[in-house]
Image (cartoon, rainbow, N blue to C red):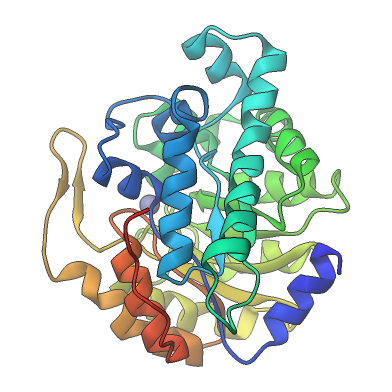
Length: 328
Ligand SMILES: [Zn+2]
């Protein structure tokens, strides 16, 4: 079955697909030092690919149907300047993100998959231009005011080209803060007609994406694409998901589903990092049934959400009796 047929099959199955949690969160839990690194988890594509495989594997064991590659903050120019590699090697590193995830899925299918679990899928992560700027602007989208749609397409093209060539099941355009960048990505996706994708926005409150535009208007951009399988929100507080989906429910094309993978709801401080709150991450499993009722077909977690949260999410959504996450 080709990947788009598999997607149709999966999406029409009687439960949502469970996404993984924050890959960087899990890598840090296993000892990687990523905070403040302009490449973030993408550096490990060069320095420690086995750590990425292990983190993917733990999310698969915990119940993720989809794992997302370590390429959110990866770009050809950043790899060239920060890893001192050729642009050809930078392209290989980007593609290796998909290959590592696929290898891990193969290992899981042959060694760790419980009976009845579907074959997991791979999403190739594309972060916003603001992630490259490494100044938190993926949560404001302010840079897009000074950029044209074409300039944003030029920025994203090499990354999308590498990911598409490596053949993930989806491309995940994620944490997108502005209408303009969403338009650029939807247009760019047409240059890769065999690729499917989801488009997920960063949001500032219960009705608006980060640049202040209505989420309901942002959803209209997704409706124009025949290659998107879902549109939604990620890396916002879990408490915002229901009002956001509600605010745009009437705008969603019948060909699309919602994707929702909030962070733990803890507060991010640029100086101090995540300000911990023990209870926050418990909200996702608790609220996920509502998102499902609202039509979410892809549900998972973003920053600060680890394998144990995904296992609990799966239990809530699919009543799974699969074994809990265990050490690799
Ligand atoms: Zn996040």
